[in-house]
Length: 171
Image (cartoon, rainbow, N blue to C red; front, side):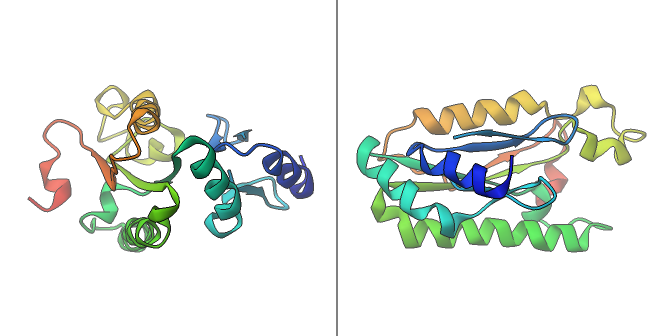
């Protein structure tokens, strides 16, 4: 799908689009403001999505932006300084965006998981067994929850911890 085709697809759907990545790393679009770059990567663009999100908020009483942050954005993690800083930025961006556009019926949530059993965490699977990691389905279930809440219920972030991972929050 070219970037122009992706944008045409997205404009034809005034509901939210969920941009996800398959386990093989390829993007999968399901109708909000995802843009496919020249290399086929999906980039969520809040600014480019606002018109569609406002229309969805008006039509349905609610629209939802879900940003993927990390537990590393809640408390800096050793050897992950740059990653921690960028994920903290995602959390701050989500909070600021909620303040800016919440009156339009648009809700913004940052997801902050610890290790999730995906290819991204292969580097740590020698120390943490895949079975002890958060399941991708847990993350998906949180989005289902967010979609089911009322317009009066704003959930700024969801933190996902593994048992015994309290230190991930600096506690």
